Image 1 (cartoon, rainbow, N blue to C red):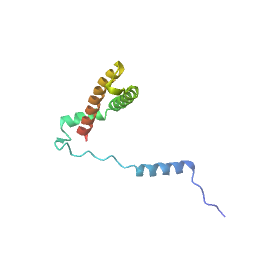
Image 2: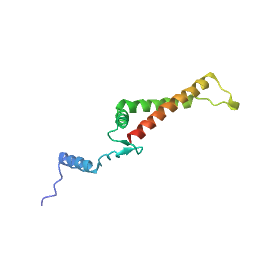
Image 3: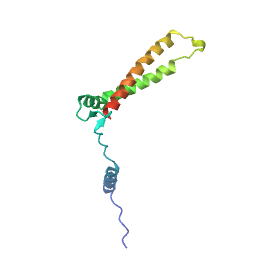
Image 4: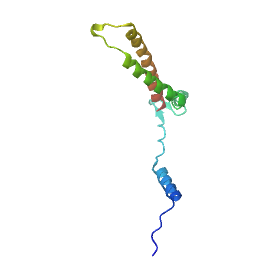
Length: 112
């Protein structure tokens, strides 16, 4: 009597990879308009797409998030609206973070 054969490791791995490829859904296409007015060929939208999909942009945003976390951790809240020089500087730096994150959100909305 012949026992059922077990497939070789290579063919089993190949079948698993093919199955995994079938499970991956393709990226959804971009909507024809962003903000109800910017078409796919609009120069502003093309610029937004180019900037947001640029790999260093993502790295810069992640580094900015990390720096913001450190700034929030270093900030020392004092009672009665007292402050020290480090807190004064950090309060001003928070405006910089606000500007950076607002620009990021605007670019990502323009890319949509």
